[in-house]
Image 1: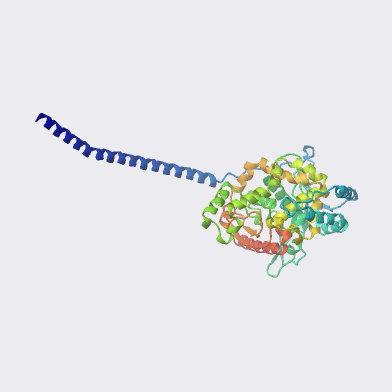
Image 2 (image 1 turned 120 degrees about the vertical axis):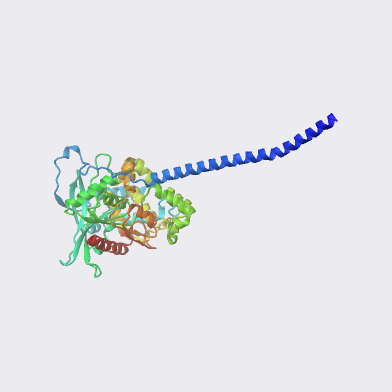
Length: 492
């Protein structure tokens, strides 16, 4: 009996244990679920916090940099003895320079040339056959005296700004008094010069029946470019250069004016609009881009979520992989110029063939990236004399080294230049977006920098050198933009 009773008790105990186990498991699962929920909430909160911090950091508008508007870029011993006069200037291809140039031509012609690979076209840089034709034109067909006269068809001047003699072209329209004349500052880039605008100048200074105004044109050679002196000390990046350009306009008597720029001209014009919004009446750009962490991140996300981007223009931005490969392949020269401009400058200043090759290749890619797959690099769309005029300005002045230093200065002043990209400007702005421009930016991103974006003109023609490639399109768009700026300023 006792043994049977013990067995019954043991059996009941086992049954009780069996009933108790599911309860413990349920309690354990409930505890684990609660822990998971708490952890998930904490992770979500932390992720939201990081996202908020990232957003506030990316969208933070920095303070406007303080700049010395009278910074002296010339030799210290000339400070206080500045000649503020405006002096007529004339481009001269001196006989001594031409004699030396022809000697260098002969030296290069005697060298054994390295032939490009078969079917390589311009994918390895300049193509030996294509470049050979341009070089032969320079040696045998380029009429130096005639081109000198051509370059002097407009009035040229020099004046000293902040210690540097600044060269500029100044063209006043010949119009009746009832036509309003407005000042327009045209800013070139690299490897360009004032020569870029020669075809557009008469189109901008000739009255049009649909407009009650016309332009008075000022085209400076940027400091260190062409016939303008460069600084004698480091620091003259895009934003300080904007101050120089503004002071030039003041010297000429213009307290308010319009600006047009592409490439470096866009960056300098953008800085002028940001620093001097009460002086810049409107800004027209043919390279509407602001490179910030936020714009880069948005560009990458747009490849994942295409709805971010204007659908009809997505092929100008994507796929990201292809664009990144393109920028890496075509930006080798930028790395040199951002780091050791004086080193590459020695080679380019020594050899006219080297200088021409270096510059010509930029026109091949800038006009249309697909040109590098053509035997002639697409250069038949240009008059060869026009391209050589630009090269002659670099050669005759020996400015290639000083022109490249601005890239190094921009790297040195990175914090300031990045800040200028992030600070919105209220200046009325218009963007001309040509088909093969190297950089493309959607309207909503352009408005981060230029909230008063009055309009964009997006075309399926043209490339990076808008004024030289498509002068009629360029001039028409500038007129259209300034008309809208004038209407705004009239009623604001």
